[in-house]
Length: 106
Image (cartoon, rainbow, N blue to C red):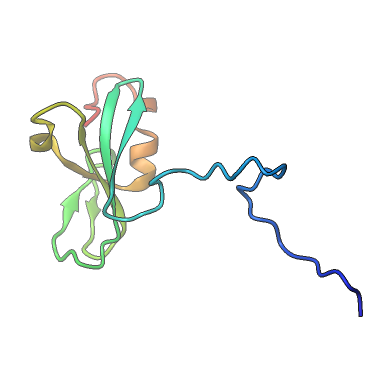
């Protein structure tokens, strides 16, 4: 038997004892994060969909987000922006700045 064991490295570990550079707050459902986009700063919250029983309409594709489907909720990161909350499919949110003119961005 070999005296050393092979082990899988953490994908965020850069070695050299510099510490890990993990994304902060990017994968925790229900935690708000600020995202900077060309169309402004947005508060974004991932929703697992497990506790939802409502159907929402995605402003990106104008299709329904069925109850129980994981998605995102976003709103402008200015005071009072909570009133502009919208539920998005994850892919629609990522591709919204690529949409053509004349379409609402949120």
